[in-house]
Amino acid sequence: MARPKDEDLGDDFSYILRMADTDMDGLKPLATALTSVKGVGARTAIQICKNTGFDPHKLAGFLNMDEQEQLRVAIESYADAVPSWMLNREWDLESGRDLHITGQQVRFTTQDDISRLRTRRIAVSATPRATRSVASGVDPTAVAASRWV
Image (cartoon, rainbow, N blue to C red; front, side):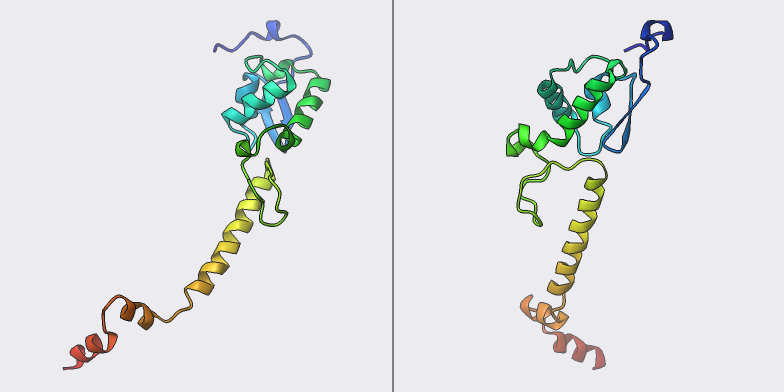
């Protein structure tokens, strides 16, 4: 899509929109601009446009302040408006609910999950190595004895 001329955009055009701690490009179609928010992919962006009644092909910069606020509310309440299989975090371990996380929550949640899995791996890998080699059919004493002979 070719970039529209500045005369065609008008005075009330927003070149940058701020949603969910992310700057969205106002020169992109709304569905494409929404994908710049972490946690919002192409399907989610189209579904948000359907929930709000906005045209996904309309340039994002043409949204007025009321429509931008309506879009913010739609992003925040996305988990309540769609089935659970469309969410990016089904059955959260801490809350036990189905969530759709966006923005910085994606990064924080990923870091928490990784640190929880690391502590679990350390607890599992605390078994002695000799036990593993015996379970695999290799006698560790036979290998060590053959080296000294």
